[in-house]
Length: 77
Length: 500
Image (cartoon, rainbow over all chains, first blue to last red; front, side, top):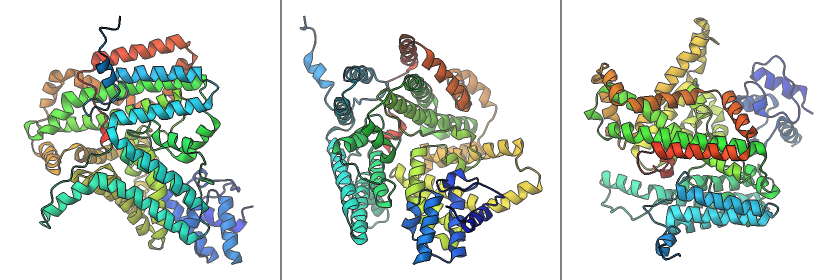
């Protein structure tokens, strides 16, 4: 499940009013989430949750569900 | 009965000859492909025979084009196959990382040795750092393509895009050797190709229709348009630009932009079509590049398999690394990535400057994005057709500057082309040129019109061909081959990208 918090950060960063984000949604399915905006979304998440991703962790993420799980695992540590 | 056949000559056909390569579109190639398709048909249910026949043919094909250097391909295949497994099996992250860095260093080391050693020696000589004689190094054809293919496999294992390395050296060998894309791409990904090998090749009626369409398009683009305008116009102007007026230099630049598109995308069409006939779907490489509205958009449409490779494996990691610099970080990442594009093409200052130019375009475009958007909004141009056409024309001409540098044999030649265009234009010569070079002019027109045909129209032709009976399809293909043979002005020209 994608949390409301993560969804809000993503929509906010990409200037979207509403977009249905599911576990299996990938970045290129979300309007405006291109290779340049990608880093802005990652930075916004890091700032909001006060966490730090490693480069390889982000490269491994295949969809937003996996991104959510990565964030959850960071918050637990 | 066989006394008139010179067996020695026949045998020579199968031996490497540096002056006689085996290219797509040559009659010997078509003959061999036909034979291979028959084996394929006879072994319809025997997956093993199909795979091995492709592997052996691919090796022969590569040997015919590169001689003993096919041993290097073997080496690269073994190293990457086993390192893929070692990286996957390594338990400690430190060891994983070490193995990964080692295999990347081996891959890049080979690439740098074969492609750049003499270039670096030449630079050292120019800097008066010594007097080095150039080494006798032959460039193995396709090395940039297959090394990148191999690297994508180990990188994908390391970052987890491929969940498990393949256990089959046979399957991996087919991925590495496959004759359809070994010489000039597309730089396919193992993650997309290996599952196709495992499942066994499948050829539907639609695939055959699409394959015939692609091979016909490819033959026409490469062997008719590209070779004709290249030999009869572009080569002449670029040999001595100062002998021609500015308008001719400009026309030669437009012609070259089209030539390289038809050459490379034509070759790619044939590669995709031939692969389809054997049941494999390769990655597409082109998507109407000249309608790009920005340089970034162009690189999403041109040589897609290379640009996505660099995007995934170079740009994204760099962007993550530089992320604290915000937009400047992205600009730096894109700058370095496209410097990589320049280097990838080879050891010549023209390619380095070409890469630098693309880097600069893209970095400036990132840094001025907000500013440009504000201007367009203010002028109420955002979303208008006018703006789109304006952007297409500007983008095309920005890229044309790059194309001239790319084509020229030296930076001096490129400067001469620009010099003629800007100081010795003589626009009226255009009409003389049209009468003097009418066939070239017509070819250029046909080429550009064909390029702008929307994909939906292509799809319609494909469906029509698919619906035809097999013998009509064969007849169509034969007709195209006859057209090609008629128009072909000289010996079959090697694909420009074979040099990279």
